[in-house]
Image (cartoon, rainbow, N blue to C red; front, side, top):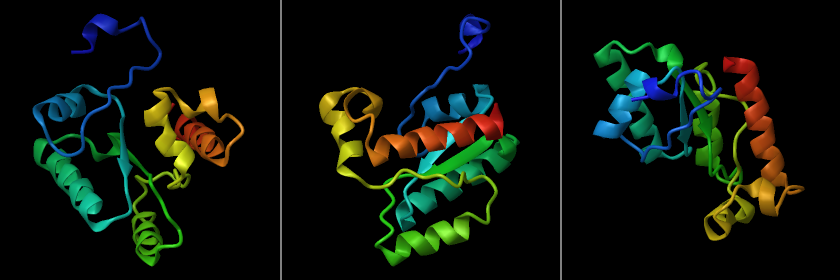
Length: 138
């Protein structure tokens, strides 16, 4: 799937719908790193565990699965508790994306947050996460 692009790009990002599908399964096998956003809720954690089990079942290295929290609302005890528990799993980056209106507006603007709210806290959170990803896997 990615062979025609080898050598042309430093990074190739493929955005997949949540859960397991034919597309995501192919991406899991082809990718060097799988970045998985996880909302700190019970349903999202179930999906995370399903994907982790799939990796184990298919013999895919779990080390290529790297996760970060998104839509985080630290006013909710459940979010804090889930994050605290899953941070023990070294697959999770420390930086996270909070639940903020500037993040939601990306769908309205149809452009990255850097284009319309560069100085916002949300944009800084994305920059911090990207720096951590670069340090951790590149």
